[in-house]
Length: 227
Image (tube, rainbow, N blue to C red; front, side):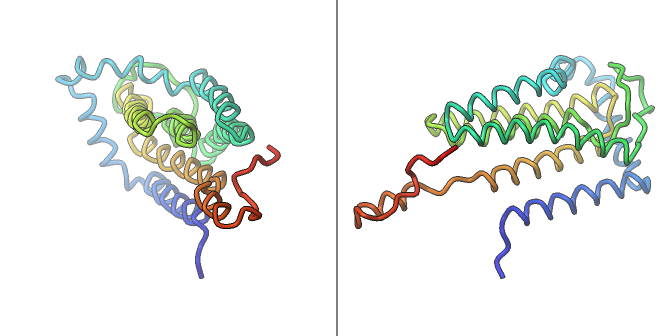
């Protein structure tokens, strides 16, 4: 029996996320978290990683909201418009999901080091890590379906990958999240993006064009559809 890729993405993501949550709840991840935090905040790296201060703002609520609006615009421009609307809605729902999960796990913020920025609320998962993954990832999916040249699409993928990684790293460097908060955020965000991409994937236009070439009366799947 063949499983739909959406189910595989969702199932794998949930298993990985729950696994990390269990490590956090049982304290099994404490040693790992401490080692990474002490490494990132080592005295000889303070100046080198200082650029992460401004970077962290690119995962803030304001930045993610702007990306959601841009997602809607790109969806309308590249078509079909409903993919942009769905993408923007997914970003909003992901934000709600993060807050619910934070309240459920109720992990306190790190106290190993003095935080560079003050943050309130619970720690797991990192909202910046998860929402930047969702927002920039969904936008990248829509760009991949646009008429931009392939090299430009690859450039967008590269920028998004580096940006999401740095935003996550910035949350550890600023002292407001444990590494496992960030990793869980990445896992949750990537799962949402993969599910979005799978559910909104369009049928390839090339087979339809080939079918019409052989049989002009054949029904084309690439003709404009409502929405």
